[in-house]
Image (cartoon, rainbow, N blue to C red; front, side):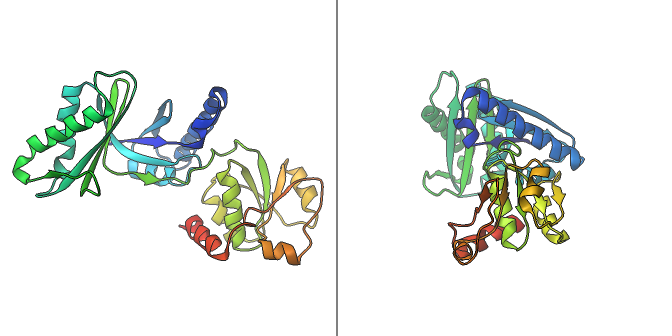
Amino acid sequence: MPTLLIRYGEIGLKSESVRRRFENSLVQDIRRKHALAEVPCVISSSRGRIYVDSDDWRRSSEILSRTFGVVSFSPVTKVTSEKETLSKAVVEFSDPLMSKGATFAVRARRTGNHPYTSQSLGADLGAALLDAYRDRGIKVKLDDPDVEVFVEVRERNAFLYSSTFPGPGGMPKGTQGKVLSILDSPNALAASWLLMKRGCTVVACSDDADMIEGVRRWDADLRTAGVEDDLFSLARRHECMGIVLACGLDELARGSPPKGDLPVFYPLVGMSDEEVHALMERVRA
């Protein structure tokens, strides 16, 4: 079973202590989602990367694609960073990828101290592939090749992969406080999603089961609240730091925004109808 190498983005820009705390939150969320899905896994990490080994890497991939904080992930083969061993591993890894007459490129990068540079490693591994599969007539093509072989060297280990899948990005769940989201229209799903992407925990306020389930797809531990007239009192009872509404700029101009003692967030206010529709497709996918 391949290991899943997980990349995060914005977390890495934080100070050391904040980065470590946010990374721990991301690991906890990944572990929690695997437990709820009944998929046993082992999670480890090094600076800038998280690794998941599970009994079902395809199910794990589905989980990661809905985990905020995950920018992208790849199924990888783990080998040693020693150059001779690495060259043999790349040749073996690439065998099923190299069809007759295919063009290819090796994308190598490294972190740590090694007796080679990223550029020289890529060139040497490319030469090893040309030599190993000369009977297939393969050729190097750095721009838009048929096959890309990625090699990520991190200290004593190297990770080989040929595909990358997107996550939702953003910040890990629960790192930015709790908000009450009013699910009173389809657009409210998009508004909730945007706050969740920023790391907020959402309390879904709605009597519509379908709306609640739309948000629960992104947070299996979702808390809910029934609809009440006094939104600010409801938010305080659930210890929320603010309220999320799906109003756009036109709606705000026509109506009277609610006023109270908590912030009111309008995540969709700067988006066009086309942008909101595209986001809804993403949320429902």
